[in-house]
Image (cartoon, rainbow, N blue to C red; front, side, top):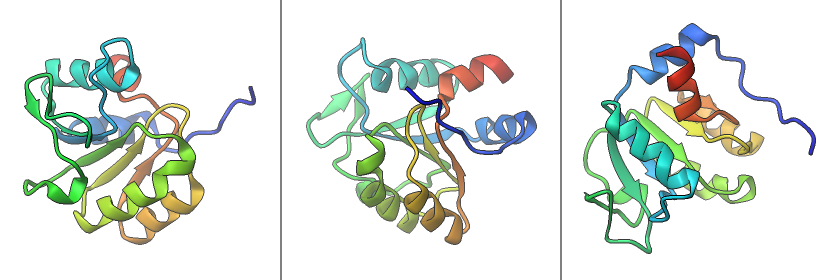
Length: 139
């Protein structure tokens, strides 16, 4: 597999992003062996307020699941996306309407078109990085 580039944020910028605590997780999984479950669980255990978005679940980790980002009324700091790169665009388009500070595409996820849309809307974009790994490395 070809190594995928990631965004150009410095460690300090990633630390600043990780100081934001309201995280919506698109594609959060009920399966404990999947990164889309254990990454948000780790974040939740480390002071982040996690809101799951998964239309096929009512609740994950005891938290109410939402069908879509637009169903969430609360303020959002970070939209963390666990979906294949080619499926990211509609989630990013929807997330932009909620005006999060950051859209974070997990490790292995990169969609230049979606990332440009978010940046053009004034939203910071992190791609091809794992929030858990970055938190453990920097915090």
